[in-house]
Image 1 (tube, rainbow, N blue to C red):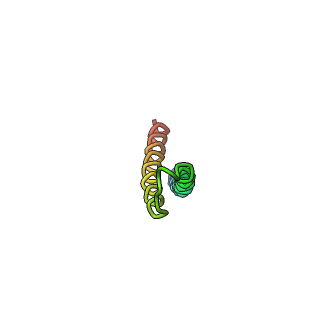
Image 2 (cartoon, rainbow, N blue to C red):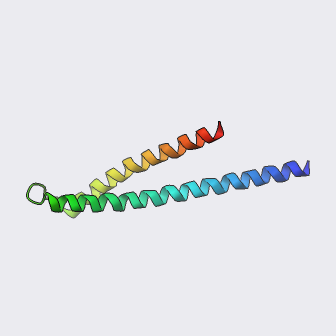
Image 3 (cartoon, one colour):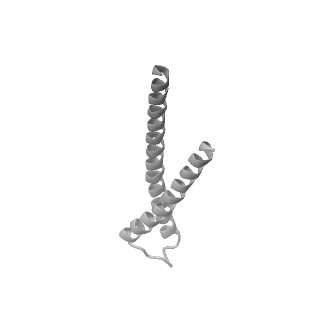
Length: 87
């Protein structure tokens, strides 16, 4: 009985640690995705300077939208991987 309680506590603790690791990973990926999209849009605006003249605020807004899309895609990937792991 005591062994079972200890193993359940250990499993719960490991599960919590796994969730924290996944949440931290998701946050890091989201921040890196924002930086990536902002740099790529800045580069695109330099290349297309005669065609496309965005303001920095516009580039930040586009970066936020693209980051949200990327973040949601990564979140779906994490959930699918977790569901496959349970099966």
